[in-house]
Amino acid sequence: MERYPGKKRIAVFISGRGSNLKSLIKHSKQKKALFKIVLVISNNPDAEGLKYASKLEIRNYRINYKDKLTFENQSLKLLKKHNVDMICLAGFMKILSKKFISKFPGLILNIHPSLLPKYKGLKTHERAIKNKDKFAGASIHKVTDKLDSGKVILQKKVRILKSDNVNSLKKKILKIEHKLYPKAIDILLSSL
Ligand code: GRF
Image (cartoon, rainbow, N blue to C red; front, side, top):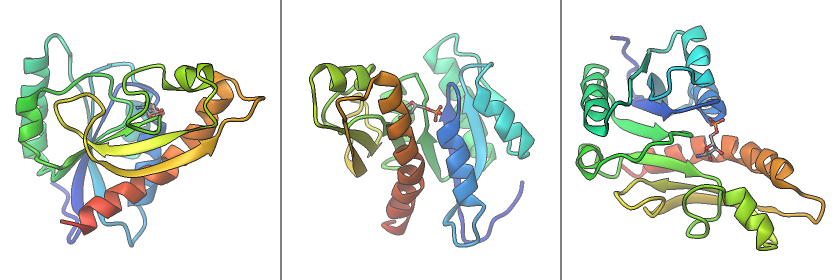
């Protein structure tokens, strides 16, 4: 196992594109970074983000999601093997069990594309536009057994313009997500 003295060891769970994973990896490569991404886990064998992790020689695993328990038990084995301190969910589309979450108390973060507590769940951009909101945004929060409901660590707004549609809003929010997630991790790690 690679050792990174003084750095916390993070696993990222993904299900798709992995652009947040990329931004976390990029951040972690800086000398001043407080963490290293040591493991990537995906429930989706075709997740684009896995290719990127492989390219950068970060350990990555596809774990078949036949059922939650098997997925979580296999993940826990890997987390232990790689001595993982903290988990970041980044576009991970499954809900973790209370039991799993309790193994990493206060140490699982998620990124959500809305100004929580507004718009928990899916289709956040659509809902913000439909409701004619003036602002949308992204939130990084601690994961609890209630969906998108744990303590918000960091949040940033973007203005919704009259000219915005779901796609343009998604792009705008994604751009801030990439800056926000590494910052939120640093905040959490500095508070430990
Ligand atoms: C992001 O918008 C994130 O907020 C949400 O899922 C999307 C994942 O995008 N939870 P990516 O896979 O990181 O590119």
